[in-house]
Amino acid sequence: MSGPVPAVTKPVPAQNKAQLDVFRAEADAIVAKYEEKRAAMLPVLRLVQEKLGFVSPEAEEWVGSLLGIAPSHVHEVVTFYTLYNQQPVGKHHIQVCQNIACALTGCESMIAAISKKLGIKPGETTPDGRFTLSTVECLCACEVGPVMQVNDKYVGPITLETVEQLAKAPELLPEMDTPFREAVHLVEPVLSRRFTMRDSEIIETYVRDDGYQAARKATTEMTPQQVIDEVTKSNLRGLGGAGFPTGKKWSFIPKDSAKPKYVVVNADEGEPGTLKDRYVISKDPHRLIEGMMIAAYAIGAHKAYIYIRGEYARPAQILQQAVQDAYKYGFLGKSAFNSGFALDIVVHRGAGAYICGEESALLESLEGKKGFPRLRPPFPAISGLFASPTLINNVETLACVPTIIARGGEWFAKLGSDKAGGTRLYSISGHVVKPGLYEASQSIKLRELIEAAGGPREGRKIKAVVPGGISAKILKADELDVVMDFDSLRNAGTMAGSAGVIVMDDTTCMVQALWYASKFFAHESCGQCSPCREGTGWIFKIVDRIIKGQGKQQDLDVLLGIATNMEGRTICVFADAAAWPVQSYITKFRDEFEYHIRTKRCDLLQRMKNLNNRMSTLKPQTEPTNA
Image (cartoon, rainbow, N blue to C red; front, side, top):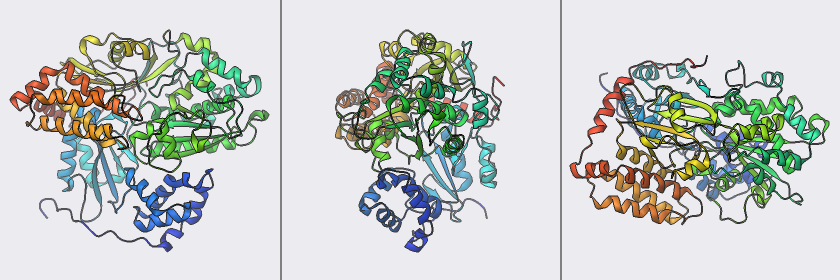
């Protein structure tokens, strides 16, 4: 047969109660892990989809009956999150990242190549049911862009050779390699010290390398207040993006509470340009668990949850195994080190919603609801998970804690800058020679980080840099001599955020870059607040119109006006984050936007496409640079 076969739409088959009751015992075991039945909503829905391929209306009724809630509430959850299929998908579900970092490395040409090879467009399934093709927002594997997820497997960088193998034998596609790049200007790395060890993720490796000794010290030699004091001395600040002093945050948890206290780990990494938490979880999961133990001891908690991004299938498996092994070794469960302190941990996978990285939205999701941010006060420290005192910290933040207890807060503080102690993991992607993860002191300058990543590609010059994930305002090439800590970047008019550095060289069209950013925010807005819901939608429509050659000069001021009216007018800061790229891209590159509107064309887009097409034929470098 010559040429691709057009896709066809088939009726959705029903799922009956007998099919669902087959795995009722598995569902009951999941429910038993949670204090409230409804909190098991996401994992039970995932179980249904894993067993039957999709979630039908009949399945929604079954889940509602199991959890004691109305099917309508189950349905609103199914439709809120992106990872639940409401109809069958192909045996091999191909999801290609279409966000900024992958766009800079040629995702559009790879999407076109896959579409042509399989004979389907994004959103379609082949007639034989073998493949479904989708485009998705950031998979947070920016160091190997362009990247795709085939079922649960991350594959990248995608090349034309990859596309051929995908069509012939998708099950044989190799999972992407994730080499750690290097610790920059550090005599002794902290967070990455085990990343290059053989079998770094297994408990035997961790224990041999003094693993869990910091938890032993904390629980047998220190009082909870002494632990908090040591973390306060370290000047550790929240590394998820907010930069709030960690010790102070821990101190907000009430000492005496009639309600149970909880530790919740925010592992819902979703900020485009960011990949650090995936490395910690995959390469050193016991460091995270030990940090959780110390934090739980400090605040008096005996139950903890790790809310991990739903797309992170392999990291979640590694983490679950690490938790199980920690139970076997006696670190979790019953009294650890005969100290009288005990902790239970539940690994809870999300279901595809960037907004759940916001801590109160994460709590709502963990309780089995839509990820809508909460009005505050009350704050989670007083009324968080299940209306109880809750400490929420990011993966990287808690991963620093064992070293702080082992080496001392003052030692850790000296590794960083005056107001931000310690080192940090920096994700570097886009137009650099060696994209990847780097560890460095927070006193390092942005230019030094980019130089460590090999600088821009040969013959190219840096045009703009996102210093802290896609939400951060961009910096131009003459603004790179800024220290990469929270206060210095804020003083420079941007933010440290998640430390996701995205480098754009002089082939980048800034209008196209803003198109990807505005598409992301329009897609990920939860829709709860009108300024955000309407504002992100209108911003994307206007930028899309400019890209298509239909823009008007007044559009730029309209965009800036919309962005200004979104800031500070919503329950969470998502609207502010959506506004900042609009403000910085247009303000710093207004001439380029005006040229687009005036001439109805872009001289850079074709140049970027040609360069990325040439790159797609090259085989990627897979060896770690520090091997």
